[in-house]
Length: 205
Image (cartoon, rainbow, N blue to C red; front, side, top):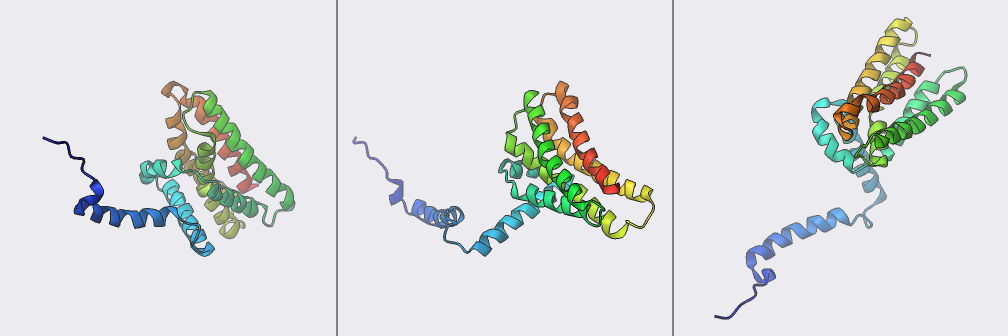
């Protein structure tokens, strides 16, 4: 008997399946020829979906997969939005904007480095991405307070800010706590709480 090598390219079924998969794969990978508007819309949809995953705890498993493909556009947009909202109609808006902007990025870096020193398995930029997207609840709380509750009692504003703080902390806790060992979770979560608490206090100032 003679050995015969089978070329999968000659098999009709393989050709048919390959012809179905290759166009979609090449279309997905080749984005250099697409219009800029298409690229922007696709990126905005991706950012929106990641925000949805952060806001809905039931989607945490899906969010963990999506956020492994990290980006900094979403966190940047949320950071700018939170800084602008908190500086809006403030007596020293420029200073507030600078403080919030610096605290967001510096605080994210400190929380990330702390987690890595505790033996965390998450990458630096992936952690910054997660912490940035988890600003979404705080940003919504700040917007609600500034638009609808600014003339009401400070206690109501405090409750809304507390809700945003709790939601942001809970959302990020699910991601950050998974990157360290069980006996070190408290050391990783403590600076995380301080980070969001400091930002939440600016909502009612």
